[in-house]
Image 1 (cartoon, helix red, strand yellow):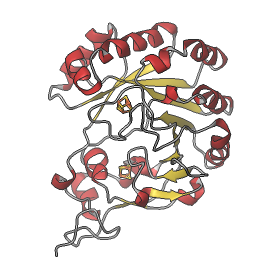
Image 2: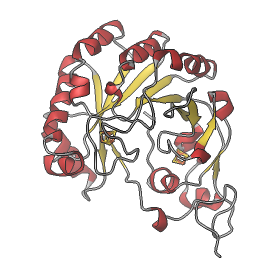
Image 3: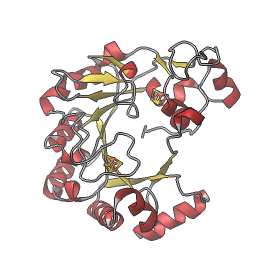
Image 4: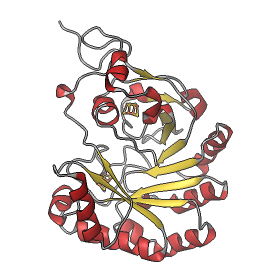
Length: 296
Ligand code: SF4
Ligand code: SF4
């Protein structure tokens, strides 16, 4: 029987030494606010939906010990991702706690009803903490047709309306796009500018590939690709998740692999601060070959 791809932490299916990312300095601690989302996208990597509670809503009291650790370990930024973070009743209290402790905060959102229903709370947060709060809005593509094919009819108009409100109101908001429509980057940038009605900071993220077609990442790849292990997200960040039914949150290697037990690294950030073996297809498609990073 040939060895299976992605199976062994130390060796690839071809018998080569698997790439490992050693921990560097902690820059960003992410909290997964929970997997519930107001919509159900065709290719949501975390399979969010209005019903998916595989990751529960994190509570303010639960994140405090992790913030203490993040501060002690020198992190400057806290990120919130989901699901749709604004579905979590504690989101704005958690963001306020982080800002009050001097962290900068990045919230990922689809800018639809869960966010726009909480405009008053968001404005109050902005008033208390003018600096340090950023929001990143997912707009898969700059055309309604492509965005709505992923997210459902009408999603594009709602997201653009939410994004424009953020920009008009003085929030520091940027856009996360995707590369699933093949086009020149300059064309994409101009498309977003026209759709939103102004220039806005744009990050275009690579697609997650199909597991069977992706090469495993070996220690030789770093040199061959001219890429440094320190440039990969798991060298400088971790994500806290609360699995349904578990008493305590857990710390996983990165925002991209919330369910795979091999990437659950401990109960605390310190415990999780150890090397990560790149044994998941996302390591290849998104981080090493695709060049993506959720880092700000
Ligand atoms: S909006 Fe984001 S979290 Fe919600 S289903 Fe779509 S991709 Fe997933
Ligand atoms: S997918 Fe996660 S574990 Fe794999 S290389 Fe990227 S950041 Fe590291």
